[in-house]
Length: 228
Image 1 (cartoon, rainbow, N blue to C red):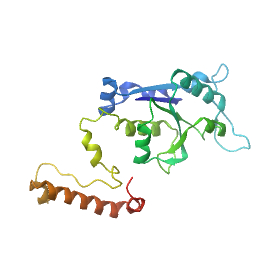
Image 2: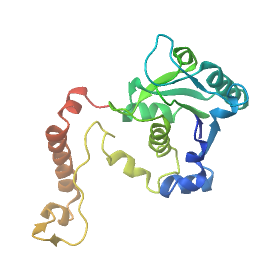
Image 3: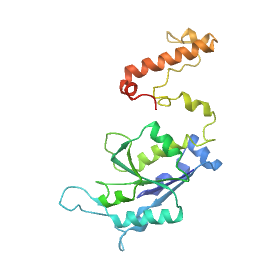
Image 4: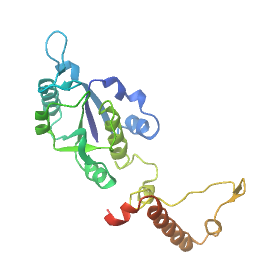
């Protein structure tokens, strides 16, 4: 699966910067990540990409010409990409959306804004707008990385044990159950006896109960949504 990012900081997406699972998937050719510098499509000798907003106000806004130029260039070289604009005004990213994005082939074009945002006309080129949370960042690069990792995990072959996907938080609309490993007792805290019993039916039942309890306590809003 391909991930293309339009950004003012393409060096952030260099292959050497991706550790662990994503790094291994890149080396194995299971995914491809390519950053496209917005400055290459800037205006004039100084490659200008931003300007002051009409109507006044603080900060700078990314101009439409560089962004349209960059998007057109990437789409011309890689047709069929699903275009995502990363913005606090977009739909909240959740696991259901991640699953949908993972099915978009050949891949995704992630448009990372900066400063006060992008010229409103750029939105006309996006297939979808998404946000990773109700807070403010300096740009869309970190959200783009979040999307890449979340989606890449669902690409066949990326995870060593694909069965683990079904047990993770949000996979069934619930938070994940508690995990324990050795030792059986640590500073007075013991592993629940059911996990040591070897009775797989009882373990499954315990994990289900614990997932429901944890979700009800920490994220009751998820129970109201139904299973995704």
